[in-house]
Image 1 (cartoon, helix red, strand yellow):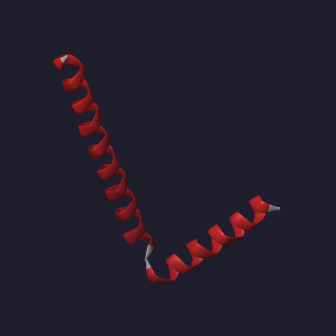
Image 2 (cartoon, one colour):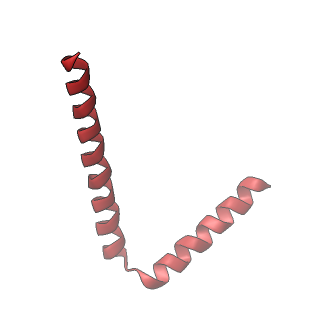
Image 3 (cartoon, one colour):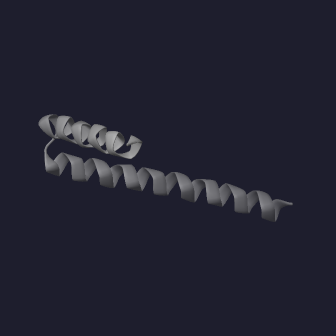
Amino acid sequence: MKKSIGTIVGVILVIIILQFVTVDEMIVGVLSGFFWVFEKSVIVIHEIFTFVLGL
């Protein structure tokens, strides 16, 4: 039951977002978000490696 409520809420949120955002904008947003996360994780991994090698 909980899962179906979560799914319904998710679908409603997506529909609301789609009212304000075009598909192109959403794709660009997802890509930029992905690249941001990728960039941050690369920096973190680099920091960890530098720290470990520094020891």
